[in-house]
Image (cartoon, rainbow, N blue to C red):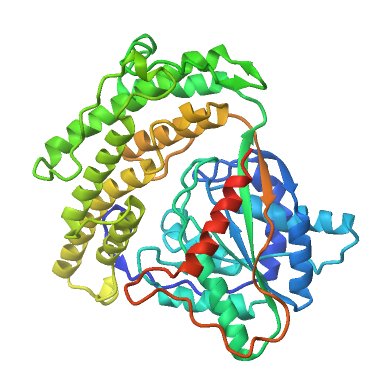
Length: 501
């Protein structure tokens, strides 16, 4: 039984980066197989087409970086767990092919070191930890604010590393191709630290941040596979398809804007009410569950869903659905916080990270000797504490998986991709409720990825440093990010949103 399931383990030490270009070359060679077939439960893959848009920005950036004229940070959109495979394609094939086409000679293989969540090896295994380390990854404790060990290592690599440095500003996947999670200011902060360090050292390199958006599309809109997925979800929540279409608020949008290559898809119009009905039953059941589990926690108690009127139109979801989802997440997080003795406050994402860190602190004890040296009683009590923390994290993981669900994502821009993304998020939630540690997502068909490179955000021009060194731009005395950091983050967000098609 692993620590994630309630057995005490040793402390979660940082995993030092040990970059091996031999490992990089090996993965570049294996990439076609990694993209095409599903090798791991947690990695859906089946990516059969990749497209690089405006990659000239990256060709120029790598050329200048390799010439010693630029320090480069790559800000990747991170909506899906498959994103690292797309990044490997970008470095191994996308940019090199485009560079040759333009007559630009680059030293190969191209690569970027990166930040990753320290929790990944907990569900991916020791082998994943070993690979991430050999790829030059820097492990980060997301809930440890700040994780100075990871930040110091990242700052050094941005300034001195032999490769560019890659970061995902969202910090975690949200399962949505056209909806961003909250962006953190870490990318901007690393860039401004690099400017400051270059100025202090009297160096002349420029500093760029290059946003890169990743967007997935299914090569064929397989409504039949999606229908089978909905039938499975209906079975899990106890719905029949005929009952699903008659539930209040389960009407299709009046605009009938669900289209496939410009033509209204009747199948989509029939499936939309069923998707809403599944979500409504799940919300209702979880509301009842948490009311029974923790009636004393009034914070976040679900608000009654108002009835829909004809004047409100059929183009939006049932009024109150979004509010009920937010109240439900609040209740789940409050249950976990109460169990771990934490106070609430902050965004759901911030609360999830605090809970994760406190849970790990109880599961991976840094204050204990090795497990084999513990007396049986000490070992049993440590396991007991770890099991209690693991139960709290179950509630947190449920909320984390649904935090991006808004209630109207499909209605705002109906498409096969949005149908699929929402259905798969519901699938993951239902699998976790049944005890699955890593939900095995069903395949809905081969996918293609569009990588759109935005114009670089230039933080520092090439040339000698100014007479007066750049002032530090860390958080202010109250811990709030400074305006310059926020402005850079806003530009990264705009670059992601403008890249959507």
